[in-house]
Image (tube, rainbow, N blue to C red):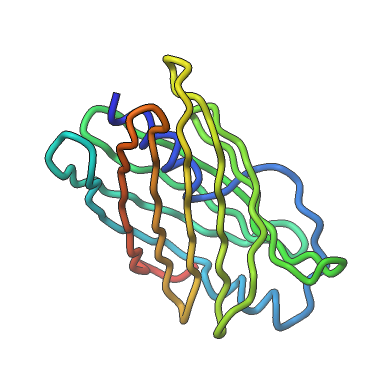
Length: 176
């Protein structure tokens, strides 16, 4: 029961394969391209009625078509692997970064990113039902700042009030 919400939450980490408008200028494309490469990170799932659970993630960010970057990632949990894929682009019409994602857990979604302090912050909140039909609140914040990537996420089980949280700082393993 505890890992199912983590799958849904982890799926929000990486965003996805849905088409996103793109007409980025040199500055926006340069910022996105600065994240191209191989990344890895580790975190600990805390909360609920079980002891903290460590997990590991890896991600590859590559140049996409036009002014986009693509990513694919995988997190290794105690009894499962989660795969996600996505695209991030800059939309000139709204002057925002936009990201879309899909996962092997059946989750798809998108988030709007805001430029802040030389980086981009994506904030995603979603209400979703688990396999038993109970509502969970899922929140994820992705920070692309100063050449680093950090993902914070939280899931709240509406019926019990239990909250699970994790932070995953990613380190670049190699440039693109």
